[in-house]
Image 1 (cartoon, one colour):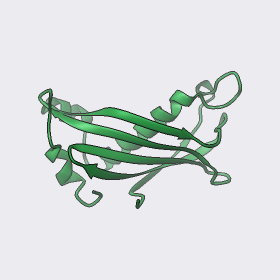
Image 2 (cartoon, helix red, strand yellow; image 1 turned 180 degrees about the vertical axis):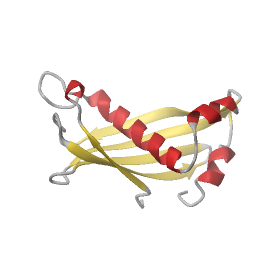
Image 3 (cartoon, rainbow, N blue to C red; image 1 turned 45 degrees about the horizontal axis):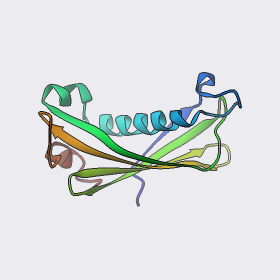
Image 4 (tube, one colour; image 1 turned 90 degrees about the vertical axis):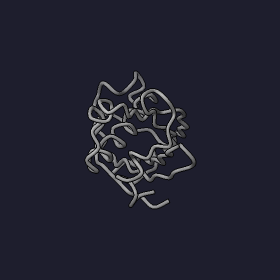
Length: 132
């Protein structure tokens, strides 16, 4: 799939475990931050969405770890997106910047709740029409 967004980040020491590598759960934080930054770049505010009763929620996460990030590594987190029925599927890749090694690949599925009920996600379709 075509990459639609990329952001550079840096590993913080407290994200590493006693082995000196990034704890696996932090990769989910990295992908979440990437999605939030992407949506903010489109003018989508989660606070405003919630005020309107529109809540995107993650329903599934499939993460494949390939190479470890370590403290102070700079990395690139990129994503693409597709729509499958009511689901938005975000395809993520995280690469260490210094050698472009693939560290993580993840597919995150999300749906949109409208006033607490599953919706088609029309609110996001209009704003992301150039990427779906």
